[in-house]
Length: 157
Image 1 (cartoon, rainbow, N blue to C red):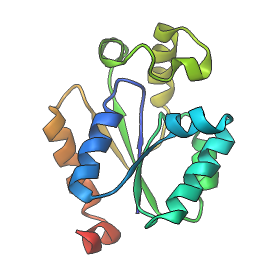
Image 2: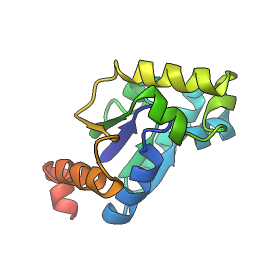
Image 3: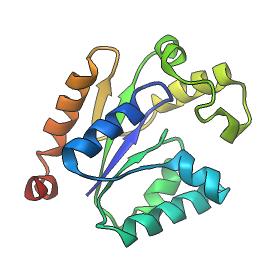
Image 4: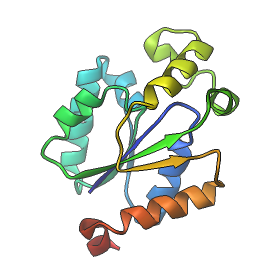
């Protein structure tokens, strides 16, 4: 199973990915890392798919989700759950790191954060968690509870 975490920078995807990785013993693949090594967005997603296929086929993906058409294309024959984390623009600006993704898109940090929060509102997901309403542990518990309802997740753990 692939767990696809989407949402704006500052929503808590990387934090949740790390906690899920520990709980489920699954690797985390951040699209920003692949983009830094492979250049274009499509090349980054293709490289991520190769990495997934070379392993157990199970992983956690950390992405804004703003290139939905790419992960739908690259992962089209794989089973994946999408969990969207959301927060307000103000909270995202407070939490996000100034170098988080902005250099990849060549835009001002504040503008990038605002655009990512607004764009993330339109993303479809199997589960949506507003991270302003819960502690990190509560977000983890909600995500794990949701993930464990699926047969592949239940057979693993």
